[in-house]
Amino acid sequence: GGWGRGGRGRGRSATCIAGIGETRGQREAGTTLPVLERRVRDGLSRHLGSPHLIIAYEPVWAIGTGKTATPEQAQEAHAFVRSLLGVPVLYGGSVKPSNAAEILAVADVGGALVGGASLKAADFIQIVSAA
Image 1: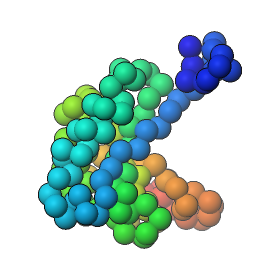
Image 2: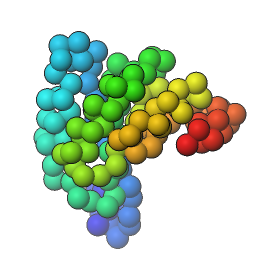
Image 3: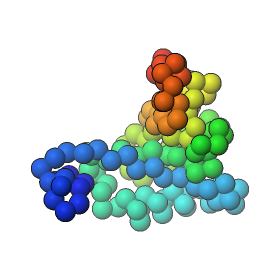
Image 4: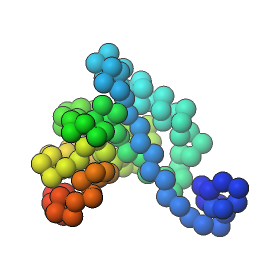
């Protein structure tokens, strides 16, 4: 069945995008990878393997702040999560036209989860073009 409650989702197929990430304090403390592993194992373990689940790495400190993980930070997080799950992982921390090409060029980044920039057609078109 689907992911709905009380039978509303039964017989339907829905795709869920689950975002996992660390806070600024966790990154600065050097605990990013253990935090990501805990998020995967504790929060998603019963849904792993579902064809209806997409994972996105979303550093909490980047969401809505205009800050973005460096390519090295994104690579480390994506490679680690991918090693746990064996599936592509999207990047979702303040993707915008000015950084999309750099983020999407990172080896283990499987695509972008675009937030606010998707609300401006011109910006979104530039991000899509960067892919």
